[in-house]
Image 1 (cartoon, protein in one colour):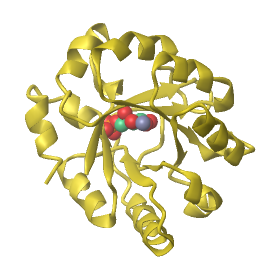
Image 2 (spheres, protein in one colour):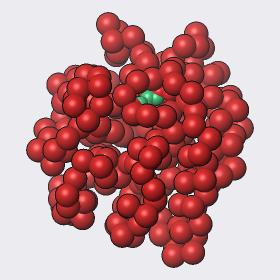
Image 3 (tube, helix red, strand yellow):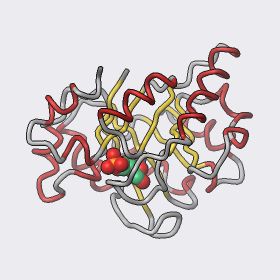
Length: 211
Ligand code: DX5
Ligand code: ZN
């Protein structure tokens, strides 16, 4: 099981110091929002570029933006290692997955709580990760939606049955209790923002998710 702290809940006036406090986590989750696909504005490639020299973690970039294809080059140049886009934002998911792979980064697709697994099933064989949203995308600190556990189970089932190797990532409302439910359902990666960054001792707080 891998951890991906979401820097959305970090202190933006001292991001460099804050990411140092979560260096034991394998990935760093970067939430990119455009005020259009979701009602919030956050991080662009400039911030990714500024953080890149200060971390060796996998930069896991979650694009919550329309026209993700227009921005992938900028995020790759800035230092993203993997890019996840929302299935609800693209006409040709396969072309975008292929483009990401050709450019040397890992490709992920995310689904909103109202979107079924069926929408991404045709692409699962090509994906490096699937990001199941367990809250409505847009903000940190929301309550976990238990219906997402079923999606995790469905994905784990397909993965096992077909021998695929995408990571099952869950994002939103993760705490000690929901982490356990997600891991039991088959998730391999936990994204957590407020739960990790609200704690004084982040390393200890992250350990509570690894049980
Ligand atoms: C929400 C973002 C999440 C968010 C999670 O749209 O995709 O990554 O930071 O925050 P918590 O863990 O506080 O729910
Ligand atoms: Zn996210």
